[in-house]
Image 1 (cartoon, rainbow, N blue to C red):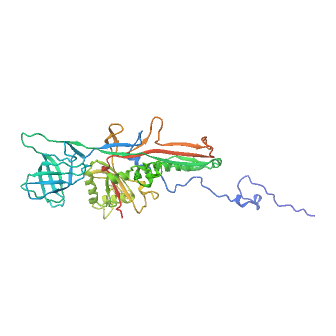
Image 2 (cartoon, rainbow, N blue to C red):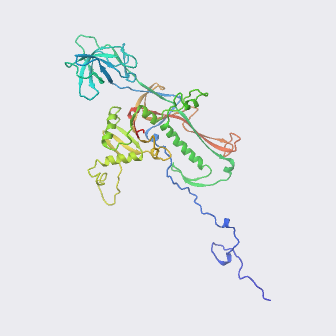
Length: 482
Protein backbone atom coordinates (compact mmCIF):
# COMPACT_ATOMS: atom_id res chain seq x y z
CA UNK A 1 0.00 0.00 0.00
CA UNK A 2 1.45 3.30 -1.00
CA UNK A 3 1.87 6.03 1.66
CA UNK A 4 0.73 9.46 0.55
CA UNK A 5 2.85 12.24 2.05
CA UNK A 6 2.51 16.04 1.49
CA UNK A 7 4.94 17.60 -0.88
CA UNK A 8 5.97 20.24 1.74
CA UNK A 9 5.11 21.47 5.25
CA UNK A 10 4.15 25.05 6.25
CA UNK A 11 7.41 26.62 7.26
CA UNK A 12 7.44 30.31 8.37
CA UNK A 13 10.00 32.34 6.51
CA UNK A 14 12.60 34.36 8.43
CA UNK A 15 12.03 37.19 6.00
CA UNK A 16 8.96 38.71 4.37
CA UNK A 17 9.28 36.62 1.19
CA UNK A 18 6.18 35.16 -0.49
CA UNK A 19 7.01 31.47 -1.13
CA UNK A 20 4.83 28.37 -1.30
CA UNK A 21 6.04 27.04 2.05
CA UNK A 22 4.63 29.96 4.05
CA UNK A 23 1.31 30.39 2.26
CA UNK A 24 -1.84 30.01 4.39
CA UNK A 25 -5.52 30.38 3.60
CA UNK A 26 -7.13 30.52 7.05
CA UNK A 27 -6.40 34.10 8.12
CA UNK A 28 -8.33 36.85 9.94
CA UNK A 29 -9.16 39.55 7.39
CA UNK A 30 -9.36 42.30 10.02
CA UNK A 31 -5.88 41.52 11.30
CA UNK A 32 -4.36 40.88 7.91
CA UNK A 33 -5.11 44.21 6.23
CA UNK A 34 -4.32 46.93 8.73
CA UNK A 35 -4.58 50.53 7.45
CA UNK A 36 -1.49 52.58 6.72
CA UNK A 37 -1.47 55.65 8.97
CA UNK A 38 0.42 58.93 9.02
CA UNK A 39 1.50 59.82 12.50
CA UNK A 40 2.23 63.42 11.53
CA UNK A 41 -0.68 65.84 11.58
CA UNK A 42 -1.17 67.69 8.28
CA UNK A 43 -1.42 71.47 8.64
CA UNK A 44 -4.24 72.08 6.18
CA UNK A 45 -4.82 75.70 7.32
CA UNK A 46 -1.18 76.69 7.90
CA UNK A 47 -0.57 78.97 10.86
CA UNK A 48 -4.03 79.32 12.44
CA UNK A 49 -3.20 81.90 15.12
CA UNK A 50 -4.32 85.51 14.75
CA UNK A 51 -2.54 87.31 17.59
CA UNK A 52 0.30 89.60 16.55
CA UNK A 53 -1.26 93.05 16.08
CA UNK A 54 -0.88 94.38 19.64
CA UNK A 55 2.56 92.83 20.01
CA UNK A 56 3.70 94.77 16.95
CA UNK A 57 2.31 98.19 17.86
CA UNK A 58 2.00 98.24 21.64
CA UNK A 59 3.25 97.07 24.98
CA UNK A 60 1.93 95.46 28.17
CA UNK A 61 2.10 97.16 31.56
CA UNK A 62 0.76 96.16 34.98
CA UNK A 63 -1.99 97.99 36.83
CA UNK A 64 -3.28 97.57 40.37
CA UNK A 65 -6.69 99.17 39.84
CA UNK A 66 -9.91 98.11 38.15
CA UNK A 67 -10.11 101.52 36.46
CA UNK A 68 -7.50 103.12 34.19
CA UNK A 69 -7.72 106.91 33.73
CA UNK A 70 -5.59 109.32 31.74
CA UNK A 71 -5.74 112.91 30.51
CA UNK A 72 -5.07 114.11 26.97
CA UNK A 73 -4.38 117.66 25.86
CA UNK A 74 -7.02 119.82 24.24
CA UNK A 75 -6.50 122.20 21.34
CA UNK A 76 -4.20 125.19 21.77
CA UNK A 77 -6.43 127.35 19.59
CA UNK A 78 -10.21 127.45 19.33
CA UNK A 79 -12.51 127.87 16.34
CA UNK A 80 -16.28 128.36 16.56
CA UNK A 81 -18.06 127.05 13.48
CA UNK A 82 -21.73 127.85 14.18
CA UNK A 83 -22.04 131.61 14.67
CA UNK A 84 -24.79 133.97 13.47
CA UNK A 85 -25.00 137.79 13.36
CA UNK A 86 -27.93 140.04 14.20
CA UNK A 87 -27.72 141.75 10.81
CA UNK A 88 -25.37 142.79 8.03
CA UNK A 89 -23.94 145.96 6.59
CA UNK A 90 -22.96 147.88 9.74
CA UNK A 91 -19.55 148.84 11.10
CA UNK A 92 -20.08 146.43 13.99
CA UNK A 93 -22.37 143.49 14.75
CA UNK A 94 -23.41 141.23 17.58
CA UNK A 95 -22.58 137.59 16.98
CA UNK A 96 -24.21 134.65 18.77
CA UNK A 97 -21.97 131.66 19.46
CA UNK A 98 -24.09 128.53 18.95
CA UNK A 99 -21.31 125.98 19.36
CA UNK A 100 -21.22 123.42 22.14
CA UNK A 101 -18.43 124.81 24.30
CA UNK A 102 -18.04 121.84 26.64
CA UNK A 103 -15.31 120.05 24.59
CA UNK A 104 -13.66 123.25 23.39
CA UNK A 105 -10.48 122.73 25.42
CA UNK A 106 -10.18 126.28 26.85
CA UNK A 107 -12.21 128.10 29.49
CA UNK A 108 -11.93 131.64 30.82
CA UNK A 109 -11.47 132.65 34.42
CA UNK A 110 -13.26 135.84 35.37
CA UNK A 111 -16.96 135.57 34.52
CA UNK A 112 -16.94 134.68 30.81
CA UNK A 113 -18.13 131.13 31.25
CA UNK A 114 -16.67 128.55 28.88
CA UNK A 115 -16.03 130.62 25.75
CA UNK A 116 -12.43 131.45 24.90
CA UNK A 117 -13.46 134.87 23.53
CA UNK A 118 -12.31 138.02 25.34
CA UNK A 119 -12.44 141.76 24.82
CA UNK A 120 -9.48 142.99 22.79
CA UNK A 121 -8.98 139.83 20.76
CA UNK A 122 -8.95 140.09 16.98
CA UNK A 123 -11.01 137.58 15.03
CA UNK A 124 -11.64 136.47 11.47
CA UNK A 125 -15.18 135.69 10.34
CA UNK A 126 -15.75 133.40 7.33
CA UNK A 127 -18.98 132.41 5.60
CA UNK A 128 -19.67 128.66 5.83
CA UNK A 129 -21.62 128.68 2.53
CA UNK A 130 -18.45 129.09 0.49
CA UNK A 131 -19.24 132.55 -0.90
CA UNK A 132 -15.68 133.71 -0.27
CA UNK A 133 -16.83 136.58 1.96
CA UNK A 134 -14.78 137.31 5.10
CA UNK A 135 -14.43 140.04 7.70
CA UNK A 136 -11.86 140.83 10.37
CA UNK A 137 -12.59 142.69 13.54
CA UNK A 138 -11.86 143.26 17.23
CA UNK A 139 -14.09 142.09 20.07
CA UNK A 140 -15.46 145.05 22.01
CA UNK A 141 -17.95 143.29 24.31
CA UNK A 142 -18.63 139.77 25.56
CA UNK A 143 -21.81 138.57 27.23
CA UNK A 144 -21.98 135.93 29.92
CA UNK A 145 -22.30 132.44 28.48
CA UNK A 146 -23.63 129.19 29.83
CA UNK A 147 -21.53 126.14 30.49
CA UNK A 148 -22.71 124.40 27.32
CA UNK A 149 -23.65 126.97 24.66
CA UNK A 150 -21.96 130.29 24.03
CA UNK A 151 -23.51 133.71 24.44
CA UNK A 152 -22.86 136.78 22.29
CA UNK A 153 -19.91 138.97 21.33
CA UNK A 154 -19.77 142.41 19.73
CA UNK A 155 -17.31 142.74 16.87
CA UNK A 156 -16.10 146.09 15.48
CA UNK A 157 -14.91 145.58 11.90
CA UNK A 158 -11.62 146.75 10.48
CA UNK A 159 -13.35 147.04 7.11
CA UNK A 160 -15.81 149.79 6.33
CA UNK A 161 -18.81 147.51 6.81
CA UNK A 162 -19.78 143.91 7.41
CA UNK A 163 -19.87 141.81 4.24
CA UNK A 164 -20.35 138.29 5.60
CA UNK A 165 -24.03 137.21 5.71
CA UNK A 166 -26.00 136.66 8.89
CA UNK A 167 -26.20 132.90 8.22
CA UNK A 168 -23.90 130.31 9.82
CA UNK A 169 -20.28 131.48 9.88
CA UNK A 170 -16.97 130.46 11.41
CA UNK A 171 -15.03 132.64 13.85
CA UNK A 172 -11.47 132.08 15.02
CA UNK A 173 -9.04 134.20 17.03
CA UNK A 174 -5.79 135.27 15.39
CA UNK A 175 -4.44 137.86 17.85
CA UNK A 176 -5.32 140.95 19.90
CA UNK A 177 -4.99 144.74 19.83
CA UNK A 178 -5.33 147.40 22.57
CA UNK A 179 -5.21 151.19 22.71
CA UNK A 180 -2.31 153.00 24.30
CA UNK A 181 -2.35 153.43 28.05
CA UNK A 182 -5.05 150.80 28.70
CA UNK A 183 -5.16 147.88 31.07
CA UNK A 184 -4.25 144.40 29.91
CA UNK A 185 -6.47 141.45 29.11
CA UNK A 186 -9.33 141.23 31.56
CA UNK A 187 -9.57 137.44 31.77
CA UNK A 188 -7.19 134.53 31.45
CA UNK A 189 -7.62 131.20 29.71
CA UNK A 190 -7.50 127.87 31.50
CA UNK A 191 -6.66 124.74 29.51
CA UNK A 192 -9.09 121.88 29.85
CA UNK A 193 -7.86 118.30 29.59
CA UNK A 194 -9.84 115.47 28.07
CA UNK A 195 -10.24 112.76 30.71
CA UNK A 196 -10.61 109.20 29.41
CA UNK A 197 -10.92 105.91 31.23
CA UNK A 198 -11.21 102.20 30.61
CA UNK A 199 -11.72 99.11 32.74
CA UNK A 200 -10.22 95.64 32.41
CA UNK A 201 -12.31 92.58 31.63
CA UNK A 202 -11.71 89.03 32.88
CA UNK A 203 -11.16 86.37 30.21
CA UNK A 204 -11.31 82.64 31.03
CA UNK A 205 -11.06 79.29 29.25
CA UNK A 206 -10.65 75.63 30.21
CA UNK A 207 -9.60 72.28 28.78
CA UNK A 208 -10.65 69.01 30.46
CA UNK A 209 -9.63 65.37 29.87
CA UNK A 210 -10.93 62.39 31.86
CA UNK A 211 -8.66 60.09 33.81
CA UNK A 212 -9.73 57.08 31.69
CA UNK A 213 -8.66 58.77 28.47
CA UNK A 214 -5.34 59.63 30.06
CA UNK A 215 -4.70 55.90 30.66
CA UNK A 216 -4.50 55.18 26.92
CA UNK A 217 -1.72 57.26 25.43
CA UNK A 218 -1.76 58.11 21.75
CA UNK A 219 1.06 60.07 20.17
CA UNK A 220 0.70 62.72 17.46
CA UNK A 221 3.60 64.41 15.72
CA UNK A 222 2.87 68.11 15.29
CA UNK A 223 4.45 71.41 14.36
CA UNK A 224 2.81 74.09 16.49
CA UNK A 225 2.08 77.69 15.50
CA UNK A 226 4.76 78.97 17.85
CA UNK A 227 7.44 77.09 15.89
CA UNK A 228 7.89 74.07 18.19
CA UNK A 229 7.78 70.55 16.71
CA UNK A 230 7.65 67.09 18.22
CA UNK A 231 5.19 64.63 19.72
CA UNK A 232 2.15 65.39 21.84
CA UNK A 233 -0.22 62.97 23.47
CA UNK A 234 -3.65 63.55 25.02
CA UNK A 235 -2.90 67.27 25.61
CA UNK A 236 -3.02 68.07 21.88
CA UNK A 237 -6.40 69.74 22.41
CA UNK A 238 -4.99 71.55 25.44
CA UNK A 239 -2.36 73.00 23.16
CA UNK A 240 -5.06 74.23 20.77
CA UNK A 241 -7.05 75.64 23.68
CA UNK A 242 -4.01 77.63 24.77
CA UNK A 243 -3.48 79.01 21.27
CA UNK A 244 -7.18 79.88 21.02
CA UNK A 245 -7.04 81.68 24.37
CA UNK A 246 -3.97 83.62 23.22
CA UNK A 247 -5.94 84.84 20.20
CA UNK A 248 -8.89 85.86 22.36
CA UNK A 249 -6.61 87.95 24.56
CA UNK A 250 -5.95 90.13 21.52
CA UNK A 251 -9.28 90.02 19.66
CA UNK A 252 -11.16 90.92 22.86
CA UNK A 253 -9.03 94.05 23.18
CA UNK A 254 -9.86 94.95 19.58
CA UNK A 255 -13.60 94.21 19.59
CA UNK A 256 -14.70 94.98 23.19
CA UNK A 257 -17.54 97.47 23.69
CA UNK A 258 -18.93 98.89 26.96
CA UNK A 259 -22.32 97.62 28.05
CA UNK A 260 -25.14 100.16 27.94
CA UNK A 261 -26.31 100.86 31.48
CA UNK A 262 -29.87 99.62 30.89
CA UNK A 263 -28.98 96.76 28.53
CA UNK A 264 -29.07 93.04 29.09
CA UNK A 265 -25.31 92.62 29.43
CA UNK A 266 -25.16 95.32 32.10
CA UNK A 267 -27.88 93.52 34.06
CA UNK A 268 -26.08 90.21 33.60
CA UNK A 269 -22.92 91.59 35.18
CA UNK A 270 -24.86 93.27 38.02
CA UNK A 271 -24.96 91.97 41.57
CA UNK A 272 -28.62 91.00 41.28
CA UNK A 273 -31.35 90.73 38.66
CA UNK A 274 -32.23 94.16 37.39
CA UNK A 275 -29.12 95.86 38.73
CA UNK A 276 -26.73 97.51 36.29
CA UNK A 277 -23.21 96.10 36.31
CA UNK A 278 -20.00 97.20 34.63
CA UNK A 279 -19.90 94.80 31.71
CA UNK A 280 -17.72 95.42 28.71
CA UNK A 281 -14.68 97.53 27.95
CA UNK A 282 -13.56 100.02 25.30
CA UNK A 283 -11.78 98.12 22.52
CA UNK A 284 -9.70 99.65 19.76
CA UNK A 285 -12.46 99.66 17.13
CA UNK A 286 -15.00 101.17 19.54
CA UNK A 287 -12.65 103.98 20.57
CA UNK A 288 -11.64 104.89 17.02
CA UNK A 289 -15.27 104.86 15.87
CA UNK A 290 -16.27 107.24 18.66
CA UNK A 291 -13.18 109.43 19.16
CA UNK A 292 -11.09 108.86 16.06
CA UNK A 293 -11.47 109.18 12.30
CA UNK A 294 -13.59 106.89 10.15
CA UNK A 295 -13.28 106.48 6.38
CA UNK A 296 -16.70 105.10 5.53
CA UNK A 297 -16.20 104.62 1.80
CA UNK A 298 -14.79 101.10 1.88
CA UNK A 299 -11.20 101.35 0.67
CA UNK A 300 -9.44 104.38 -0.90
CA UNK A 301 -8.82 103.49 -4.54
CA UNK A 302 -6.95 106.59 -5.72
CA UNK A 303 -4.69 109.34 -4.44
CA UNK A 304 -7.54 111.83 -4.34
CA UNK A 305 -9.35 109.75 -1.73
CA UNK A 306 -6.17 109.10 0.19
CA UNK A 307 -5.37 112.81 0.17
CA UNK A 308 -8.60 113.48 2.10
CA UNK A 309 -7.28 111.16 4.80
CA UNK A 310 -3.90 112.91 4.83
CA UNK A 311 -5.60 116.31 5.11
CA UNK A 312 -7.52 114.97 8.08
CA UNK A 313 -4.27 113.84 9.70
CA UNK A 314 -2.92 117.37 9.19
CA UNK A 315 -5.70 118.64 11.45
CA UNK A 316 -4.84 116.14 14.17
CA UNK A 317 -1.47 115.21 15.66
CA UNK A 318 0.37 115.01 12.31
CA UNK A 319 2.33 111.92 13.34
CA UNK A 320 5.19 111.43 10.87
CA UNK A 321 5.13 107.61 10.68
CA UNK A 322 1.98 105.49 10.49
CA UNK A 323 1.27 101.79 10.06
CA UNK A 324 -1.61 100.52 7.91
CA UNK A 325 -3.03 97.15 9.01
CA UNK A 326 -5.29 96.11 6.15
CA UNK A 327 -7.27 93.22 4.72
CA UNK A 328 -6.55 91.73 1.31
CA UNK A 329 -8.96 93.99 -0.59
CA UNK A 330 -7.43 97.18 0.78
CA UNK A 331 -3.90 95.83 0.31
CA UNK A 332 -4.58 95.24 -3.39
CA UNK A 333 -6.29 98.63 -3.72
CA UNK A 334 -3.20 100.41 -2.32
CA UNK A 335 -0.93 98.38 -4.62
CA UNK A 336 -3.03 99.35 -7.64
CA UNK A 337 -3.15 102.99 -6.53
CA UNK A 338 0.64 103.17 -6.26
CA UNK A 339 1.18 101.21 -9.47
CA UNK A 340 -0.96 103.71 -11.36
CA UNK A 341 1.56 106.46 -10.51
CA UNK A 342 4.13 104.77 -12.77
CA UNK A 343 3.94 105.90 -16.39
CA UNK A 344 3.84 102.24 -17.46
CA UNK A 345 1.81 101.00 -14.51
CA UNK A 346 -1.54 100.88 -16.30
CA UNK A 347 -0.27 99.48 -19.57
CA UNK A 348 2.47 97.14 -18.42
CA UNK A 349 4.26 95.85 -15.36
CA UNK A 350 7.47 97.82 -15.05
CA UNK A 351 6.84 99.42 -11.66
CA UNK A 352 8.99 98.29 -8.80
CA UNK A 353 11.68 96.83 -11.07
CA UNK A 354 14.61 98.92 -12.21
CA UNK A 355 17.03 96.09 -13.15
CA UNK A 356 14.66 93.89 -15.14
CA UNK A 357 15.80 90.55 -16.46
CA UNK A 358 14.12 87.25 -17.29
CA UNK A 359 15.31 85.62 -14.05
CA UNK A 360 13.79 88.21 -11.74
CA UNK A 361 10.45 87.58 -10.08
CA UNK A 362 7.90 90.30 -10.70
CA UNK A 363 6.90 92.07 -7.50
CA UNK A 364 3.40 93.52 -7.86
CA UNK A 365 3.06 94.74 -4.29
CA UNK A 366 4.28 97.62 -2.19
CA UNK A 367 5.25 97.60 1.47
CA UNK A 368 4.93 101.34 2.02
CA UNK A 369 4.94 104.79 0.53
CA UNK A 370 5.35 108.46 1.44
CA UNK A 371 2.68 111.04 0.77
CA UNK A 372 3.13 113.86 3.26
CA UNK A 373 3.68 111.18 5.91
CA UNK A 374 5.28 107.73 5.88
CA UNK A 375 2.82 104.83 5.58
CA UNK A 376 3.88 101.21 6.10
CA UNK A 377 1.41 98.58 4.88
CA UNK A 378 0.96 95.24 6.64
CA UNK A 379 -1.60 92.52 5.95
CA UNK A 380 -3.72 91.89 9.05
CA UNK A 381 -4.63 88.23 9.24
CA UNK A 382 -7.50 88.91 11.63
CA UNK A 383 -9.35 90.87 8.93
CA UNK A 384 -8.87 88.07 6.39
CA UNK A 385 -9.57 85.00 8.52
CA UNK A 386 -12.95 83.48 7.47
CA UNK A 387 -13.71 82.40 11.03
CA UNK A 388 -13.33 85.96 12.33
CA UNK A 389 -13.63 89.30 10.47
CA UNK A 390 -12.94 87.90 7.01
CA UNK A 391 -15.89 87.20 4.71
CA UNK A 392 -18.48 89.30 6.55
CA UNK A 393 -21.31 90.92 4.60
CA UNK A 394 -21.99 93.64 7.21
CA UNK A 395 -19.74 95.49 9.60
CA UNK A 396 -16.74 95.05 7.29
CA UNK A 397 -13.49 96.56 8.56
CA UNK A 398 -10.97 96.98 5.75
CA UNK A 399 -8.08 98.40 7.74
CA UNK A 400 -6.79 100.50 10.60
CA UNK A 401 -4.22 103.29 10.50
CA UNK A 402 -2.14 103.31 13.69
CA UNK A 403 0.36 106.08 14.51
CA UNK A 404 3.81 104.80 15.35
CA UNK A 405 5.80 105.78 18.43
CA UNK A 406 4.60 106.93 21.84
CA UNK A 407 2.82 109.89 23.37
CA UNK A 408 3.04 111.72 26.68
CA UNK A 409 -0.07 111.65 28.87
CA UNK A 410 -0.88 112.52 32.44
CA UNK A 411 -1.49 109.27 34.32
CA UNK A 412 -4.20 109.92 36.91
CA UNK A 413 -3.11 106.93 38.98
CA UNK A 414 0.63 107.66 38.95
CA UNK A 415 0.01 111.40 39.29
CA UNK A 416 2.65 112.38 36.72
CA UNK A 417 3.31 112.56 33.00
CA UNK A 418 4.33 109.27 31.42
CA UNK A 419 5.42 108.11 27.99
CA UNK A 420 3.07 105.48 26.61
CA UNK A 421 2.65 103.82 23.20
CA UNK A 422 -0.49 104.94 21.41
CA UNK A 423 -1.80 101.40 21.92
CA UNK A 424 -0.90 99.40 25.01
CA UNK A 425 -2.45 96.78 27.27
CA UNK A 426 -2.85 97.16 31.04
CA UNK A 427 -3.25 93.96 33.05
CA UNK A 428 -4.05 93.52 36.74
CA UNK A 429 -1.06 92.64 38.88
CA UNK A 430 0.37 93.16 42.34
CA UNK A 431 3.23 91.75 44.37
CA UNK A 432 1.18 88.67 45.25
CA UNK A 433 -1.16 88.27 42.26
CA UNK A 434 -0.24 88.50 38.57
CA UNK A 435 -3.29 88.21 36.32
CA UNK A 436 -1.55 88.85 33.02
CA UNK A 437 -1.71 85.14 32.04
CA UNK A 438 -2.65 82.58 34.67
CA UNK A 439 -2.88 78.82 34.13
CA UNK A 440 -3.36 76.07 36.71
CA UNK A 441 -4.49 72.40 37.03
CA UNK A 442 -7.53 71.13 38.92
CA UNK A 443 -9.09 67.67 39.34
CA UNK A 444 -7.61 64.31 40.40
CA UNK A 445 -5.86 63.03 37.25
CA UNK A 446 -2.62 63.87 35.47
CA UNK A 447 -0.87 65.10 38.58
CA UNK A 448 -3.71 67.32 39.81
CA UNK A 449 -4.85 66.66 43.42
CA UNK A 450 -7.40 69.38 44.09
CA UNK A 451 -10.81 67.65 43.94
CA UNK A 452 -12.54 64.27 43.52
CA UNK A 453 -13.29 64.96 39.85
CA UNK A 454 -12.00 62.03 37.77
CA UNK A 455 -10.40 64.34 35.20
CA UNK A 456 -7.71 66.91 34.76
CA UNK A 457 -8.77 70.46 33.98
CA UNK A 458 -6.36 73.07 32.62
CA UNK A 459 -7.64 76.55 33.50
CA UNK A 460 -6.73 79.86 31.84
CA UNK A 461 -7.41 83.40 33.10
CA UNK A 462 -6.40 86.96 32.29
CA UNK A 463 -7.68 90.38 33.36
CA UNK A 464 -6.78 93.22 31.01
CA UNK A 465 -7.89 96.20 28.94
CA UNK A 466 -6.43 98.20 26.09
CA UNK A 467 -5.67 101.92 26.29
CA UNK A 468 -6.02 103.81 23.00
CA UNK A 469 -4.23 107.12 23.47
CA UNK A 470 -4.68 109.96 21.00
CA UNK A 471 -7.55 108.26 19.15
CA UNK A 472 -7.83 111.36 16.96
CA UNK A 473 -4.66 110.16 15.18
CA UNK A 474 -6.19 106.78 14.21
CA UNK A 475 -8.20 106.11 11.05
CA UNK A 476 -10.66 103.21 10.69
CA UNK A 477 -11.50 102.07 7.15
CA UNK A 478 -14.92 100.46 6.96
CA UNK A 479 -17.69 99.86 4.46
CA UNK A 480 -20.59 102.26 4.40
CA UNK A 481 -23.59 101.09 6.41
CA UNK A 482 -26.47 99.85 4.29
